[in-house]
Amino acid sequence: MNLHSAFSDIFDEFHFITSLQEDVWIVKELPKELESVPRARKHFTSWAGMTYYEEMTQLWNDHQVIHVAKSDSRLANNNLPLDIQRLRCRALYHAPRFSTPIEDLRKKLVEWLRSHGGKYIALHLRENIHALLDIYSHFLFLRENTNHWKIKKNDSVEQRVGGFCPLTLKEVGIFLRALGYPQSTLIYIASGEIYGGSTHLSEFKSRFPNLVFKDIVATPEELKGLANHASQTAALDYIISVESDVFVSSYSGNMARAVEGHRRFLGHRKTITPDRYFSSCLILE
Image (cartoon, rainbow, N blue to C red; front, side, top):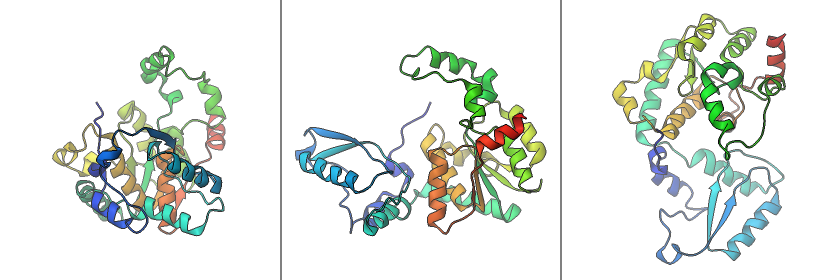
């Protein structure tokens, strides 16, 4: 069961508010007179020019409250004024500071990684359904028979050959060895539960045995607070990935893009994004 996490469970709320107080007035609750007014619903977007901000201005003029249904962590420089681009950077990378429990655990894990290898790779994994058909068959059945999940038909083989699927653990291992990383490389696995467990890890561990998971370093008591809170667990993986010497992702999803952007903001730290089409073709052949 995945429990809801409030903003303050993940971030230092006070730091976020005070860091942006010269730019944006942030409140924890709506004023009483605005609690029941009609709300506009809007999705924020990254890939937008000035027309988007003009539309937002009109929306503010027409409505007193806007409900942001989804936010986007990516940055885009689409000829925006410099002050807006700077504000986006401050809001994404300076104002958010992780909460004390997450920060304390981050410090412990990073210190352990540094003391046991000096440098480490953070590997963010996204599961490849094509490689897990035996394990995922139940979930695929549910998706096929649930109307609001059955959005479109996908041929898993076609998607994989086209480079639209995450790389498998086997492919990531071959890829890293081809880049010249030695077997002794220390790798932190920034991921939740890996479907298939030791079965799918065994071949990867044969190439890179020095794998580190959260539960190797942190105590059960320390991890207890993160149990059933996927957002808080992801926040821990995020910050450890940001601090890594090299960040590698098996799929360029939201987490990977956010980490890559943050690393660029901090000084263009090395990030490796595999070409999934090229990698899959090589391994399939």
